[in-house]
Image (cartoon, rainbow, N blue to C red; front, top):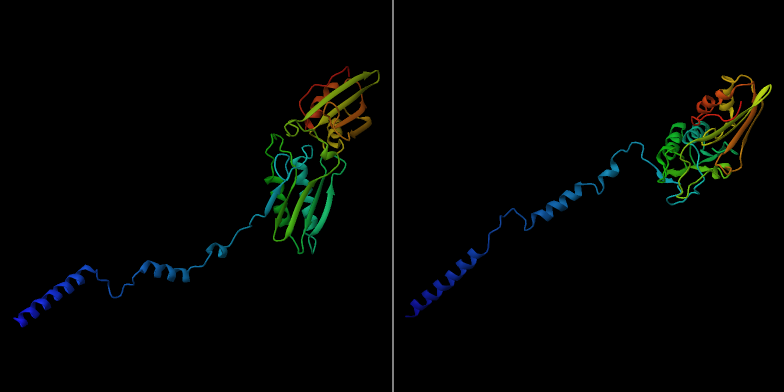
Amino acid sequence: MRPFVLTIRTLFFAVLFITASLAVPAQPKDQPEDQSIDQSIDQSKDQPEDQSKDQPKDQPKGKLVCYSPSSEPKAPPGCYIAQSAMASHVADFCDQVGGLDIANLEKGYATDTYNGAQLRISSTKKVSKEDCASRMGEIVNGCTPAANNPMNWKYGGENSQDETLFKISIDSGRSCQRKANQDGSPLQAVTAKCDSFYQAIRDEFWIYGAGFLGDDFGKELRDQMSHCTGRVVDWTFEYYEKPDADGYEWKAFGHTTIWQKNCFSPVIKGSGGPDIPCNGSG
């Protein structure tokens, strides 16, 4: 009986071994236990940490900060100038910057007018005229305050790129005395008033305006007159230190030959002002 018992016992353990072997799934000999992890590690060795760093960039924009009465850093609501004036200042300024070995310059433009501004570049290297115009242009064309601004007035700003600072600040004189509405918005439209009076042998005129002729001391207005009224005598043009009670920024005065009142309406409009009639007996 003993050999028979050993045979049954041997058979029993053999069945258990075969059953256990079938319960464990076989893995391919050449396949790691977690292939996805190994592949990820191998791929990361060949992949740059930030591939975008090696990509060429075309004229990257600088760090642009816009001055505005409605956002930080806040600008006084009455400190703004015409976009065309700011662009003209930039053109002259960058012409000069392009000729410097080291771009470090500050210059004021149209001081004592309603389009005054201070332009500045601070750098330790040479900056081309074109690069200056591009960076300053981002301030001129990229900075538009959120407040209601149909005339596209500009409050200035700064732009930094490659350790070079480009800055446009509104002059602290008349340019910071302009009209601002209760909500902080700037002048909404050009305004003007005209009076002309007959005085026997000549006409006397008074013209007031705001929002145009902000920095040329009335040159355009007088040039327009010469094409219509002819000779102008006793000519005077004056900027107010701040807008008067009616919001006007300047006044012009002079004498012409008689019956010239009808000339003044097209003269004012041709100078950038509104289309208005001229009052009085002239």
